[in-house]
Length: 187
Image 1 (tube, one colour):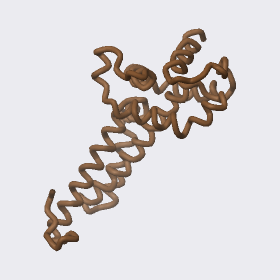
Image 2 (image 1 turned 90 degrees about the vertical axis):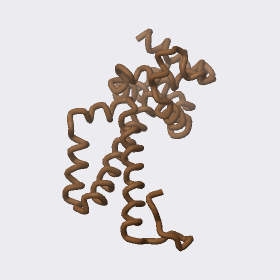
Image 3 (image 1 turned 180 degrees about the vertical axis):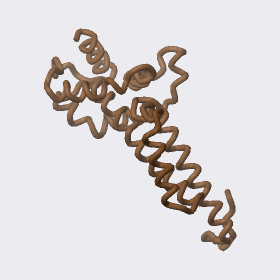
Image 4 (image 1 turned 30 degrees about the vertical axis):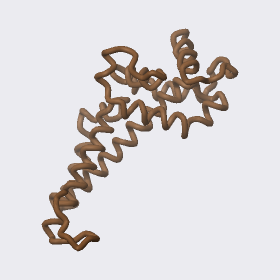
């Protein structure tokens, strides 16, 4: 569609890419765009737009969106997907869509694993921890963790922080010591 071509051209221009590739109409572009585009509806459109623009937040309403996801998407697109973009297999816009999907789904998996670890350390029961992580993955709101939204990144950061805090408190309650021979506290 013409709107996608315009978006690809704008993304290429904002990323400083040269126009040597021409149209991105190969089967790889089509497949990746078809798989990643449904994940970028509603707020995901704004996330990709923030990642596309060199200035980041172009309008005041964009300030509602946490900058970590667009930054991680840019990093993944510039590193992991750069060869596909350089060989004209993916447009810069589609590379950002795919990178956003990779980041959010990777963070969703990390969040589930961190929830399992947190639950196992707090509950001291791996079976209950397994079911807690499983319910986290299959709950109806899990769709927001698969889309290009910040929910999965926030969940991974939250569960990771709680797991670290829980581990520090468990060490303190057991009377374990750190390298300085001082009792480890809940720092």
